[in-house]
Image 1 (cartoon, rainbow, N blue to C red):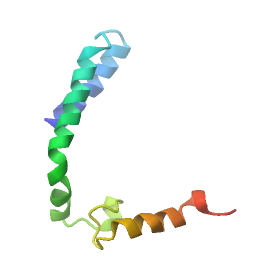
Image 2: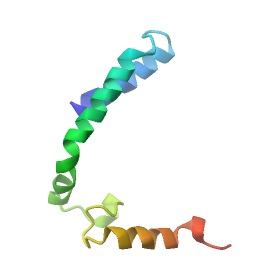
Image 3: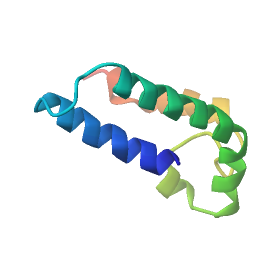
Length: 87
C-alpha cells in the first residue's frame, strides 16, 4: 500500500502541475494515508531491516547499526562532519 500511495502521490503532483487534477484535498488525502501507514509500519521497520543483515556501509544509519551505539555514532558523525571542521 505504501509503495502504491507513494507512486500515486508522484503522479498526482505531476498531474496537478499540468492542470489535469486540481491541487487540493486529493493530494492531502494521499499524504495523510502515507503518514498513517508509516506510523503503522514504524514499530516493525527496524527489526525487518536488521533481519536482512545489511552491512552498516549500505544502511548509512546509526539506528539499527551492528554496534548498537546509536548516540555514540551520532556524536562521532557530528564531530567528523565537514560543517564542524575548521578550514
